[in-house]
Image (cartoon, rainbow, N blue to C red; front, side, top):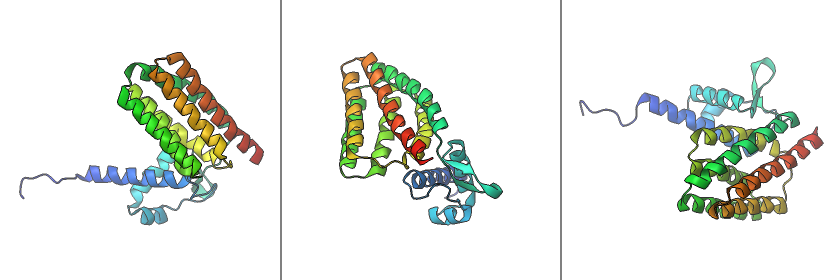
Length: 226
C-alpha cells in the first residue's frame, strides 16, 4: 500500500547477506571443509551461499583480518596456514581477556547466565563423547563468548570471536582424543562452579589454565607438522 515502508530495507538485506556469507565461509573453514591453502573463488562461493559477490567479498575481507584466510599468489585468497608464533601471541592475549570476562561476570552474571554456561558444557560433553569435533569446538567457543556476554562486555565478546578463529584453524592439525576434550569440559564446569560460589580469583585462574592448556596442545601439533 502507498505510504508503507518495506519490511526490509536494501541496507538490511545487504547486511543480512554479508552476515550469511561470513558465517558460512567461516564455518566451512573452521570445520575443515575448506582445507589449508585452498583457493577461495568468489563466484563459486556466491553461488553456493546464494548471495551476490559483494557480500562474499566483504566476508573475505573480514576473514583476512581474522587471519583464517591469507593472500596467496596472484592476489588470490586462500585458507590460511597456522604458525606457532601467532599462537604464542594468542597465549598472551586470550588469558587477559578471559580473566576480564570472569572478573566482570562474577559481578554481573545472574542465575540464567550461569545456567546457560552449564547447558553449553552439557552439550559440549555430548559432542566430545560422540566424536563430533567441529560441534565440540563450536560449543567451546560459545562458552567463552557466553562468559563475556554474562559479564556485559560486548567488545570483549567480539574480540574473542575474532581471536578464536585462528586457534580453531590451527587446531584442525591435531587429532583430538575424547580424554582431552572431556578434560576441557571439566575445566568449563569448574569455572562455572567457582563463579556460582563467588570465588572470582579461583575462576580467573581456572579460565586462564583452560585457555593455556588448549593452546599448548594446538601449538604442539603445529610445531610437529612443520
